[in-house]
Length: 234
Ligand code: ADE
Image (cartoon, rainbow, N blue to C red):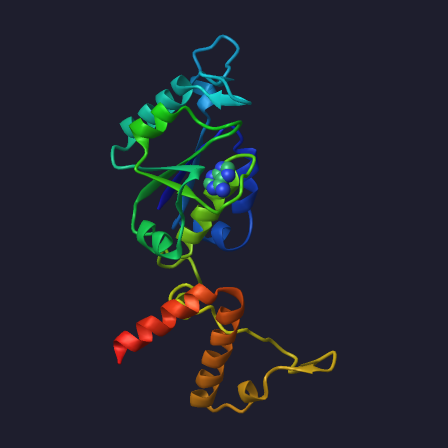
């Protein structure tokens, strides 16, 4: 899978691929990362890429020309590239999007800065537009990294243990049960005793009960979804 980050600030992104799982995936040729800077395409003599908003409003908006030309260039090199824009004004990104997008061969993330991107560029080029949550970041770079990370771990071979994909939170409406590592006793706190007894059917039921507790506390609407689904299965 190839990821192209269309950004004015590739430095903000590069470090993330220099260690751990995604670095290993790059070393194994499972991932390829590329950067495209709209400033390099600016026709302005000072390489300007933004301007005040037409119609008023605070802040600067990214001009269409540098982005338009960078994305045309990208499409010329690969007409199948799947172009995703990051903005808070979009559908929320979810785990099922991560799984679906992991089947693509080439994804480009377009990050806005300042007050946003001229809407005509989004209209012209977006295959999809995502928000990663109901809050405003200083730009789309973090959002693009979040999505890239979530997609990458669903690509075959990226995670050492693909079993870890199966029991995760959001694969079902229930949040995942809590995990514990060694030692069994730490600072006078023990891991749940059932986890230690080796009876896998008991461990499964206690994990389910703990999952339900966590979901009820943190995401009650998800518990409702789980119960509705279970009643359909009966
Ligand atoms: N850019 C700024 N805020 C964002 C958000 N919440 N999601 C995606 N892109 C953004």
